[in-house]
Image 1: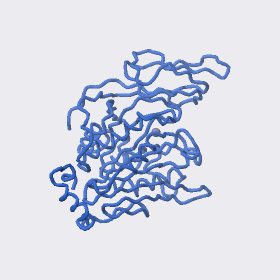
Image 2: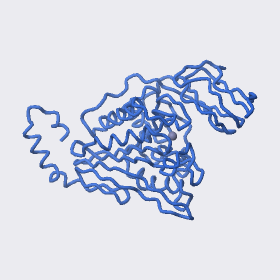
Image 3: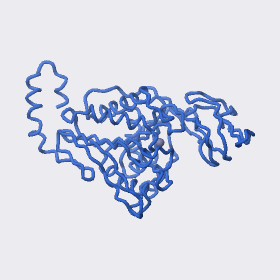
Image 4: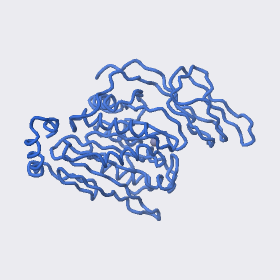
Length: 360
Ligand SMILES: [Zn+2]
């Protein structure tokens, strides 16, 4: 059907085919995520439930399924793994409102707020219920703490059903960030090849060549890496930060999703893939070795030279304890931009410019 929607010469034919859509779609089965189920050519809303356990309240994960009338890829977009990252959550609200199942080949699954305890509790990094970072506990555990059970439900009900997946992040509530994509190379060569094309289709100019993710599926740690190690090409993307809701960061995610839908043949329209990305790698996460007040000296989007002062840390009386400097010339990917800093926590990340990777 998408091949005909652009036709001006055959509006009547197109209209008749559209009207006949449910009948022609009968070969396509309903699509379900947990108890949420959509018939072909329709959209469905609901929630994945994570049952209470051991005195914790459990969690509800809102999901939209946009199930096209004809079979095709299953693209999953996940927002809110970190609950104070708002631009991905707002972008997925818009995608749910605008996606038309009658115009779609395949299935789009939107996970609106993966980490509801962190969203409603307004917490950075960690769940207010168990103190764990959801994006460090994959593939999760069915009898574990709440974050581990959320990860388990997402692994079984969402990741397992995806053919392609994007975990959408931004700088957390305390992080100032430039937009970029993580292209993880931990999977099989074919998975990496498709993920690389997905990164170009998503269209963020800076792409980190990420060779550091674990290769053991039983300790996949990160959501997107969980998909990759199960054979599903996936990305992590970043756009926005500092608990902001700015239009440019939201629109960048919407545009990225449109680029992916076109690349995957799920829609005929959409932006072209990026032709000349800035490849980044390796990156180094800079950490504080002391607890105190952080004084960042850089902004994301800046280019630094080796030895440049990234931030310094003072004690609670203003005495300078530590200076954190750039380990090499590179691009500033993110910087923690609010004062609290604990020993061992990230202060920012710097990435070296890399040569374009050889096509696989
Ligand atoms: Zn995040």
